Amino acid sequence: MYKHVWLILFALGCLVLTSPTTARASEDKPFVAKSFFATALKLTRAYAIYDTVQYYPASYQFTLQIPPTIKQSLARLTIDIPENNTAFGMELPEPNNILVFNPTEPESLLPQYSARNIPTQISLQKRTIVFDFEPPLSPDQTITIEFTKMRNPEQGGTYLLSVTAFPSGEDVVKQFVGYGRLVFRDDTAN
Image (cartoon, rainbow, N blue to C red; front, top):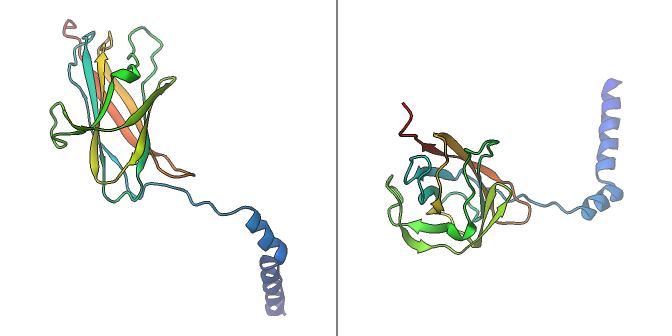
């Protein structure tokens, strides 16, 4: 008897799932595939070229590898500058003092130099620097972002800058790439 009840419930469930009203409802809301990276991008280096507190003009570089297996182009990148409630925090860079390029020696831990500049729209949104790549960057390349004419913080310590990547497409899933770790030292501290 219980076997027959389950068969009847199963048949009713199939009828409900295949009814015309259910089919029309799914046509009203088309399925939208999310755009995402198939593998992780890699922040290979964050570097303050001059790491003494209050140094000016300092430069900071962030090098990012876009692996060949990501399956999507890189459309946008953001770097969040930490917010400090004191006067010792890190200043924001001016958008016209930011360079984006393919480095000449991507594997080197030394300061990078430009092999080719990358067309980029750069804007500030509060404490976030937004990089929109036009056209989006294809897989299998390395890029370096350099903040120039920076004044190092007044207080030594470690500053973590959050880096996030966005693929090209309509409905995107962002990817946290990592923290760019900049360390500033105070030579006068004993």
